[in-house]
Length: 263
Image 1: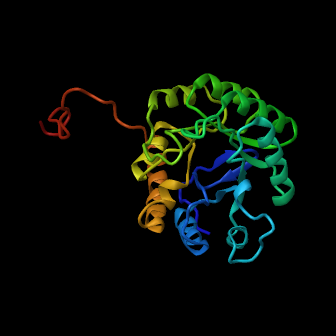
Image 2 (image 1 turned 135 degrees about the vertical axis):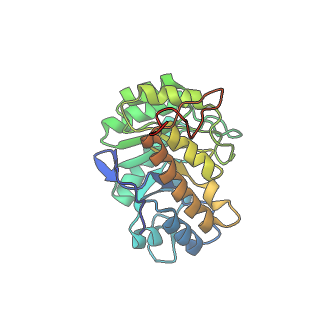
Image 3 (image 1 turned 90 degrees about the horizontal axis):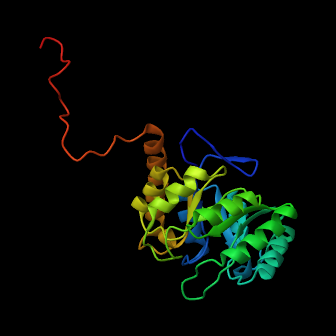
């Protein structure tokens, strides 16, 4: 399995990851296509929708079998849950079936927009943290809710960039900046990434990672898009660490005369 070359690791839930790209496993045309795309993405962690996969499947021609064969770290998610109770039960089922305490917590509040029910998400997060889970909650881009989820003990906060599967990219970078400013845990942008520049912008803002599914699986060439996303995440992180120049209204000469030897 390939991993990003960036030298600084992402610390999350007591673990360390080289790749800052988290990838979903849904919507691919076949198991083999998902294998090729996920490997090309460089992702170490992949999400699995517990309510939408056969947990008993183990062969290499099945999704779970392939993911285990390739050595991916499984991040079960509670996609499809509309109440805190259902999300908690699904997370506990995932822990028993997949032998992991990691969970991407989703509690959806609206079937059309797929926006999160933040109150139910917070309720479920508190229960799951107390139950020993490492909780990564999908939430809106509200800095107050992000702070409450962190205070509840979540290992990261995962604000949406835009509605799930929309491909619109980050719609409110200012709220993401506020979340980043106050957060004491990793911030991972989740949902709405459509192309490589969206991923790059998220990392340039200072986000610790980005999670995507449709942006890769829905592309005309998922494997090539996965590769593009991998490089975009690396580039965005490197640009953030490098520190961009200030924005200015007027030009500044790139070859100034002042200070040149012999003038």
